[in-house]
Structures are given as C-alpha cells and as structure tokens.
Length: 256
Image (cartoon, rainbow, N blue to C red):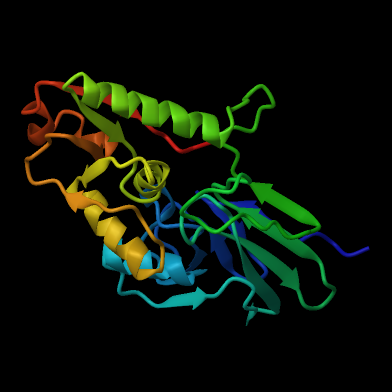
C-alpha cells in the first residue's frame, strides 16, 4: 500500500513532495489559489489556478506575477506529480485541485470553499475521487440545513417588491465577487431595475467577459428611484447609502 502524500501546516497547507502550497495565507513560492476572494489570495511568486480565476485575479487585483492558468480537466505535471483542477461551485472559476504522485498513483484532493448545489453564475462542483481529501467546510456540521434555492429566490423577490411598493429602496448586500452576481441572477425575470456599486460593476464586467449572462444592470450614480441596489457589505455606512433615507437593507451571504 502506498504512503499518503505528506501534508504539513506552515501558516498554510503545504505539500512538500511537489513543493506546492494550497491557498497559502502569505506570499509563497508556488501556490494553488482556489478562487479569487481576497482571503484566499496572496502575493505568491507563482500561482496555479483556473483560467477564470486567473482572469479575475488580473482584473481585480492587478496580478502581474507568473500564473499557470489551467482549464478544468487539463493535466499539469510538476515535481513528479500530476495536477488536475475540477470546479468547486463556490464562485466563477473556483476550483478543487487533484494531485497524483506519478511514482505510485497515490492521490490527494484539496478544495477551498465549495458548494455542491448548482448555482446560477458558477460552474457546478465536480469532486474527484482521491485517497486523501482536504476540505474547507464553512457549514460542516450536520445541523446546518438550508432551504431550497427556489424558496430563497421567492423570498428575495417578495422582499424587493414589497419595498418598492412601499416607496422604499431595497439594498441587497453581497460580496462584489460571486455573491453579487448570484444575487443579480436570482433577480432575473422579475422586471426589476438593478443598479450596482462600482466595485460590483467591475466584477460584473469581468464575469461577462468570461461568458456569464447577467440580467440588465447599471452602475449606481446616485439615482436610486425604483431600483434594487446591489452593494458590497463594507459599504453599509458609506456616504452614498447614508444619503438614501428611505432604504431597507438585507444581507445575502451566498455561503450556503
């Protein structure tokens, strides 16, 4: 029986045999970056990630360091190991990495944030079998149970409609990358005018460049009348929102 691939923790997960970090917290040599959220990105000397994540890293963070951008399912060999990426379902481009030791076929699958439900703006998760599995589990305990997507969609539609009918401005908060696009997709088909924060607008443009179709939207420039606003959570006390006296707000985490 083959020995498992060694895994160490050095302020991040490290595979010593292929000299590969997995979502390392600080700048390292060679690191796999599972997706383009800031808590998984650092100034590494060389990054391995999916093609969509590479695009988002360059658009969002202005990365100029070398990036090995892999299509899902495309094998890449390094240090006596074969690596293949598979979709993780978290946000557009989010990936799991499957590592196989070429000498004996021993394998390991690592995933950062993942979602097994099919979303509207990300590739569906496709876990691969492996001898060792490492998972980041935000809701790993079985007592976490979430309602069906259609039930959540209906609740969001109803909340937005009620706010607009009452003369209020509905503001939905979601991360500018991933959650905001999923929220907009949930609003599709409801004849709701959508205006987004400039940070969300930048990510919308990056998503659309990658082939994702979003419902019609416009960048928010101060006119909130009759619109659903989609803003990042860190803008909750921002000047533009403080100026809207008749707003109602809700957080859409997207984490489930």
